[in-house]
Image 1 (cartoon, helix red, strand yellow):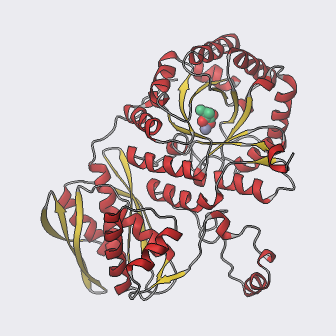
Image 2: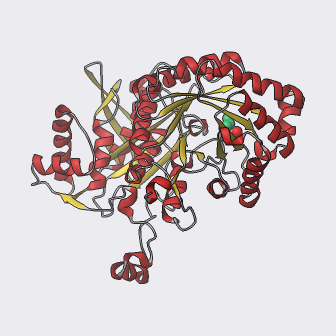
Image 3: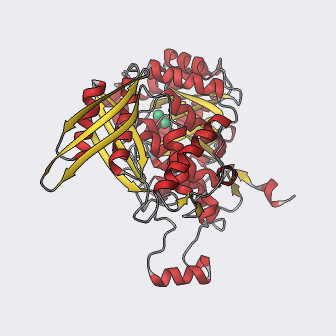
Length: 517
Ligand code: KIV
Ligand code: ZN
């Protein structure tokens, strides 16, 4: 038997679209969720937890759309241990061609049972098994999560697991809901489950760790070492409060430390990691910290002379992962203003960007505009340009032009011209600075009053002529939207980002989540 065939599979269950989207301020619309789901399939995740269908009409529709149009992964919907939740979850995931999973959860820790659910152990035991049996009539693929498992009395946890497996659960997930666990302890809990739940061999043991103490990845890996064969995680580690275990860190730990995770493999196409990270960051508006492991901008940058010298002599002196293995292409000089369309198309193909003929022509025009302003165009510039100009949804208002004046003794003023339903109109405004003036002009033109929650600017590459990428988060009528814009002119990038967010706000609001436990 070859080595590959004796390797055990670690199932990667991605919950970016469910727990990840529960991160405060990370609301995604249907189109954005669909785009992320497609990238998750390209990444090779096994299960996509697409949402919590009963929580809102918007969530239900998004899960349904993903199930009916995304092929290549099992699509999962979350449900409380209630028939109406399970009905909604199944209704939403049933069209999935790669398999449908229902994920039922019910809290089992003393504190949750006593104060939140106000139920005794016997009742919890009964409700958990009943819910699994109920879900089983819809699909054979049932996951059960005893919420707050890491703070549950172990003897009671074993009883619950035995009973849900007997009722038909095929995956039992052990959530560290509040990120309280510690690696040795959590690994020990997984071992104890294997030793004390007699029918555990009939189910996959899964783990789901939160990052409140910064231990989500360490805890997940300790669990894998002790027999867990499914890990629940999110891109960039986004999620409720301090977030969930980060998918890219778990996968790259397993791949890099084969000496420790001997015999374990995942289906993740690691070259897609960087792209997935950028996409999730762009659509949620959550910037990735420069020092973030695997996907941060500095993850493969060597500043000190000694390190640079070492890397030139032998890369492995200071790099344990090859940047290209995670799809990080670095700052590759690619094209200039004399480059032709063929060279541009070739480079897009190398970058894995797929565009229609019409999009290609538009992208080429934008590239030429950029090359006129910027002497050298890098791969990152091209990716930013595609994200900014081509892959964006139809905009209710489009930026036609912007002009502004500002200076030490000048009152900052901006004039913005927008297109709306084929007509152009412009407005001027003054403000505390040129960005503020420009946002006020946009507010007057669109009539959308939004408060700026977050504003970030980053240079896409190095150099004085670098493309500036602005990410904003705004709130209006309790609805939060993220926007992103790029330009060699940072005020224009700021206007594009803000307008992008305002366009999202202007789309009909979805019903917000209402949940009573
Ligand atoms: O953190 C948690 O306990 C959860 C469950 C619903 C699995 O997200
Ligand atoms: Zn969670």
